[in-house]
Image (tube, rainbow, N blue to C red; front, side, top):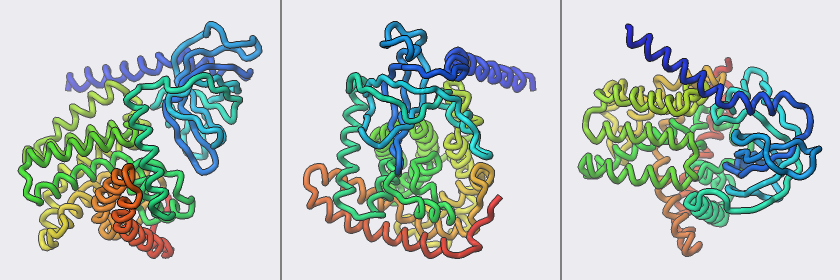
Length: 414
């Protein structure tokens, strides 16, 4: 009990220390109503249907009324900038931005300030005046990866029609702007929004399913672990290695390692150790990062409940790994479902059924989708052959979602 009190106190101190690191910039930015000019580099680009959100790492900030930006008053911190779709800005662009910095405000029950604070973002800026100063200032490796990712996205858009192209880009590359709001609502209504997002639950399930399929295909456990680990690393790099995906990848890696050792039920301590190390690096994710919470509970659910569901589904054939997919999906959902109800105020009554119908095609979509993208970098004609398979799979997915979303009893609102 004494150690519990000690480490709990240390955790509180770590959280307070992290908050104080950003206090000086937060107070400066949000205490002023005047227009300011700051210089920063684009860290992430989140393109939406009608606008784009840029995460800017601030290099210097000055009062706009004082003329050109000279010696900055302050360095460090991030600002979320919302601007028009055009002109387009990319990772590594150095920008001079003139706008009124604002404090994030709550939207109904959604605490936007806490949501952004997990990324050390304490100020927002809407439709500012932007001047491009220079390009390619970011990490050279990441610049190259993002360039390949953009080319793969273009291959998908040229090889598939909508909405299949938008769904594949969301599932494989994390690019969701090609999906209509109506289709997103239908996915949410039937409880499978996680399929279109590279979330903690998404990567954890993908890692577990991949390991199961490789073992069933005849790989030794260690061989399956190595192959799946390489795939997971390449996959996270390919989507740009956002912080949420990296954290989910760590959880997925831990799950695969436990499966490779054949000691899934004995890996709780390892899971807790990894979680503590991640919280040491960024304590805000415990309270405010839904992706971290989902991935942690998904792994925990698989550890504790997979043996029970294995008995439940023992009569299900193992064709294409269907039994393992069902076991992984249901085990993860046991602890994840209450969290989804809490955060998203909705529980889908038919989510288990829809997951059974669509989750088995997820590995096939990703495999054929990635192969099609890679071939498309060489020959678009060759990629279209594989995209025919992807089109049929995703068309099946859309039809299932549209069919079940039309019923009024599909979910409970909170």
